[in-house]
Image (cartoon, rainbow, N blue to C red; front, side):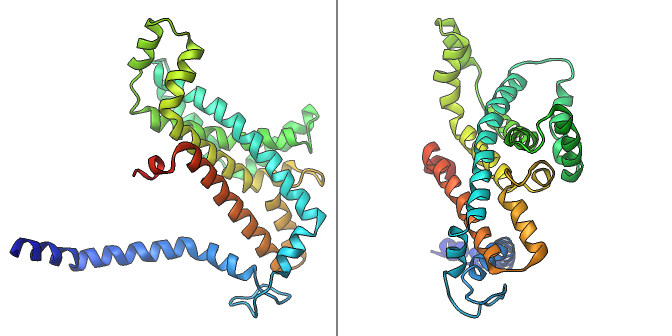
Length: 273
């Protein structure tokens, strides 16, 4: 009885309360911009205002009724989905090759793969702009996908590498000994065992591309412009609540992608349940 009482007291000691308070503050700090954006998107007034002057769906009606916004939303999806597929394919294969083989310069690979994260996005955007002009791909969807893959592939590589750190490659050797070829071994043995990490990597690569601004700013043209770039263009001329509505649509699209990925991979396993 006394031991149980001591345990209850420990749950409410000062360090525990301070830790809980810090956790709550950090969570509020992270969630506040998202929550404020969502609330402002329902403002019925002509200008962005928090708290809003009233509740209205007028800015969502304006978004879905505007061909330009629908076009840029479609462009963002047409760029993010191929980026997700290409970066996942190359990132997973690169991570497998890195983890399965010992080779000279192996320790430098992680540093090289991190370079796109270390170089400012605006510099990458300018460099890619000059390159795609040289090869005749300026203003195309392909050029933007290639640019986004510069960030998405390292993201996939690092995430899958973390999953493979605890993977037993002896299972693959056993499958090969039983007559399975490399492709069959990958799809029947390797991929099912790392699928959760692969799905998470796919989600992150999609989100990376869908919300990317710096590279898209330099590589898009009026026909391929993405939502983040169009939001920037809109803010240069007016501060309308439609921007908050567009941002909310992007937020819920991101959450939808996370939900689909969690469902496909098994939400209990992702949550660690």
